[in-house]
Length: 104
Image (tube, rainbow, N blue to C red; front, side):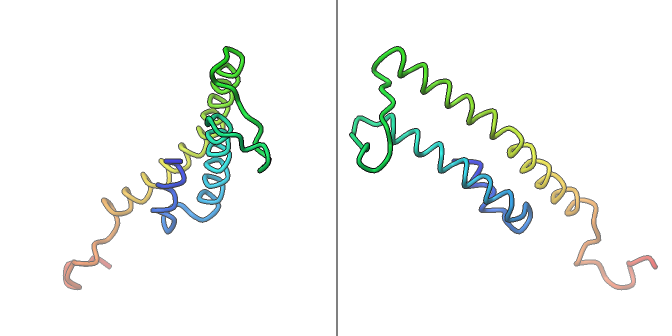
């Protein structure tokens, strides 16, 4: 969810493809959270993950690890895009320089 939140906040710097990919992953993570909730959502297409059993807990952990692995390239892309933006801010031409201070 945090990948989606931060990529959405910085969409102008990171691009809409990253935001869409992060949203897709966040949606799947949220679906797992609902499947692990103590409510029966099977009528809505969410089969329960019974975290109260050892098998259910193992499935939940396995799927969370898969989400983390799938999120790793998205995290790297987000960090690279933000680092590049900061680099442009730190080293790019300042919009506050006087014209006489600019070199040709």
